[in-house]
Image 1 (cartoon, rainbow, N blue to C red):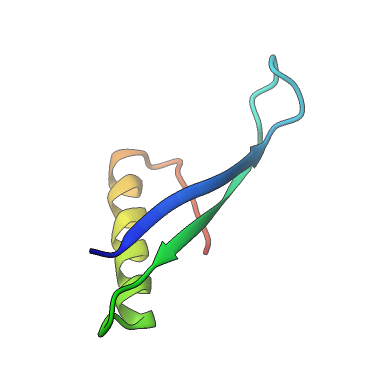
Image 2 (cartoon, rainbow, N blue to C red):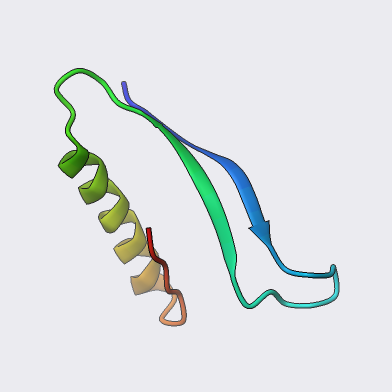
Length: 61
């Protein structure tokens, strides 16, 4: 099976301040036959799902 893991998270300037942005890096290990388009589709679907649950959510990859 392919794996998708969040390996780093960054954001904010202090514990008591709500960050205006955050970023993460993903480590994506594909399997034979899986394409870049497959990975992009998975990411786009995941981001779209979060957006439907939180209208303020915005993300770029």
